[in-house]
Length: 498
Figure 1 (cartoon, rainbow, N blue to C red):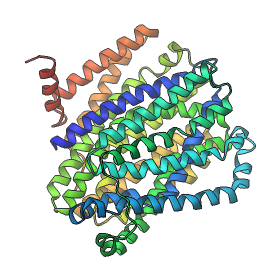
Figure 2: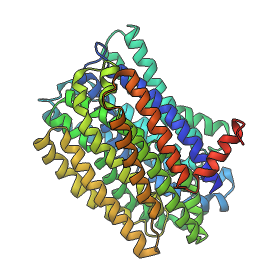
Figure 3: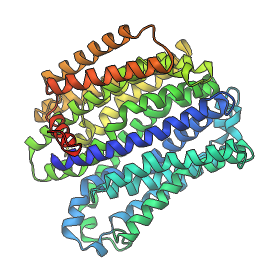
Figure 4: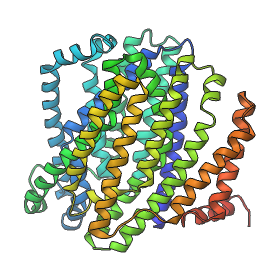
């Protein structure tokens, strides 16, 4: 657990630094006079469609790497390890099929987005550039995690990618990028950029070896690999579509301006989920090994600790953002239309709490012999998400997708919790789960009513400082997580406090 804790903490710090850069980008996108809501919304649609392209083309390759890497590593010399070769070849060939489908169904895209989001159509082909870059990075990231390089991969995805965006925003504001057309084309190359960097690192550190001769491990486990990928592919595809379907529905039904407002709330709610990537990336290799060694107690420990640690972070950040959202929009002089995103954030933030508070259930299932359940639970998620998003968006505007996601993700995670309990007696919650929620609620009420009439910078600083001190004191006093005190003790030693 020490290794997971250390890597999770470092990764989380990197991710939060990345989100700080992301907030700067969001500020520049939403500040009065720089970009319109539709232009900001177009960047979100680019990412959403590119993500779906990646999901279709990745063919469950990351799950194949998570599950079978220990077998390749233990039984093959590095130069005879063909795992990465086949991972890149299969995903690249699949992306060619995605391109073909994109060309064939372009008229459908025109019909769906032409009325409310015509700004998308001139740049449609550029989405394929972003999609392929995201695909290759996702495959390389899964491979790098097996070498415990989660810190590097999180830096690239969460920091370097956003730095690329910051650079092109600044160049656009300074008129060095003369128009938005060139801006969005350069935006499409941000994911290919980090994919090239990660590939270069793996190549330089001698972790990339290309061999097109199938190894004995590939031959021996081929049927199991094919079976795994066949089942996991559907589940991961369904889950990915469910994650980005809201923005696409809004763009189709309401227009890119509404997508921009929704994206602000979405990006701010993503702050809540920042520690999850660090914990997931640090846990994957340990879970794979624990399943291989049949160490069930270790898996249960990872499950419960991931749950309480993520819940503490998510509840704290949710309350901190909630008490400051409206004041922040006004104080930073964002366009007034973005105030409409407050209630969207409340719903999307609650979704993040539910998803994080249930721990690494997806990774436990995905690395177990019951990985087929990924497909089953994913189908349930899709059957809930697609119709709920469509009908609730038509009924409640941009608040609708927030309601839809909260309902579908809650049911989705409840199914997974029940499954893991019935199969293995794994359970993520303890009494401290309830204490954490109650503590967050108490701190919200105390800080909201204490500074309800204080606005501007003074209000932002006072509310934030009071909440952080009160919430941190409560977490430490009630010892809500076994990982909190060691971190606190280490921090005190670093700054010279006994």
